[in-house]
Image (cartoon, rainbow, N blue to C red; front, top):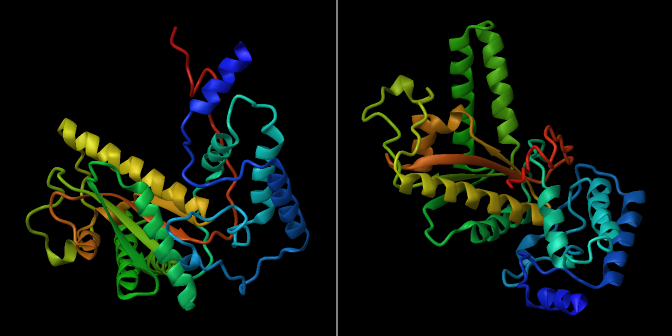
Length: 315
């Protein structure tokens, strides 16, 4: 009777995965063996090319085997999916789709170390289409969030890098921790780093409190403005919805082996940045997402224990 009840629960449970995963054990083992063979001979170099995501139909998400040859560290990635294969039999009450979806979520890492921008049109098309699919995963029913896409190199990306330089330089000079030349050198280093990032996405949410002063002096456009938080319940809910949308976007990119970093530094709170994006006075910038193919997969650093700390039972 208990077995029949368990089968009934499993059969009535709707699928929750965002993409189509194979539930065939032989296919999973074959995928793992293919990755193990690649790991023995794969070396990363500047000539590696990512798969052309523009060839993937938007109505049919890429399978795990389709995206297995991208620029990520395959040894770490294959071990992640090997964990799924080894633990699948230990958790029979969870469907393979659900468990692999959960594995995909927990395997995502923030990365700031991207392969440099290339001039290949296929690379630009790949990111363009991947970002489009990610935004489709990100939008909510109320849709208070707007995403602004910036591909590199472009006029907008160059302007963004110049803004990063000016904001960093002014901040360092205000702190007076070192000389002018040292400050300029550090600001130039940041500009060069941002120039190597293949794509950016700026997430804004509308209907917030007024974010900027009515008039701003020309010399102050690179100064960080104070954070103006949501005030009403509706504004708070819209801000939370925007954050949830960004998380969906990051997971969609990760599903295609594309790295990302959600940044909320001083750059996004300057008039120069808001002018670049085209923000209205009541638009809040929730984050600047840096996107590209990761050179390496950062390690997970957990500071808190799950049971009893992050997760607490209320009895």
